[in-house]
Length: 353
Image (cartoon, rainbow, N blue to C red):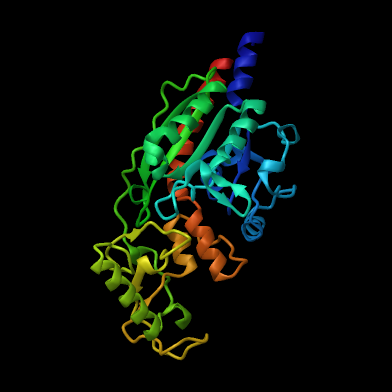
């Protein structure tokens, strides 16, 4: 075998391993999707997440040999290991319809959430990864009449990237959740990304009955009569003003609305589950447990709505779990996009040979 053929043979049989960083990692939803798509061909070398409870969940489910870094704004780019793929689900509350949509002016606990994407730009300008992946709320596109998104796109282009973006709905990717999000993929300009396309969601429709827990759930998830009356009055007040706010009971044959961590997130996805037979409260409640079977979905059901498998470990209280799964991503969608990204990167690697 001559040298050229030998090198070609070695290259064809060499398994490329891409190094990734997980910024604004949350509980690792984006990483899960990429791990599923890349398999053994990806290695996470750095994780940043400032929320301590999210860190607890992350550590319980990923066994890394390094510590999770905290506030990304205080981390120098040169202190981050070299990487090929940047995963960055920068905070969405600044642009979300469920929030106040303050955009770049949004300040939370002294952290300007609307400008945290600039830390993604700062880090990627230094390291020049092959690809940058971001996810955010659909409202990012229309925020400030589209100017906010144009700024974000231009920032990536100015540091040498070709930017692709698409709005995809989780319900088209095998989970019963009507959740539209924008996905941004930016390839470094020297990589031929001309054949990159976003996946077409064509999974068969699923419904809430496909994700509800198999066994009867705790009575603590069933609403009290007093709280149910409060929700009814709240909805009536908004209806009188012409608003559509308020609780919503979903049919088990339907799909859930987008689960969110704040406001009425849980109450907008109530279901009727008549399997409960013991209505003795296990927590302090006002009134009695309702006999209509109206309950909140459980954290496990929310996890399933986001595509998390049942081996995902719960290490924190329900309050934190609802927040975490409301803030995270739908793994099915991420995995589908990641497979498309892998195709481009693998093809580019092959052509280099």
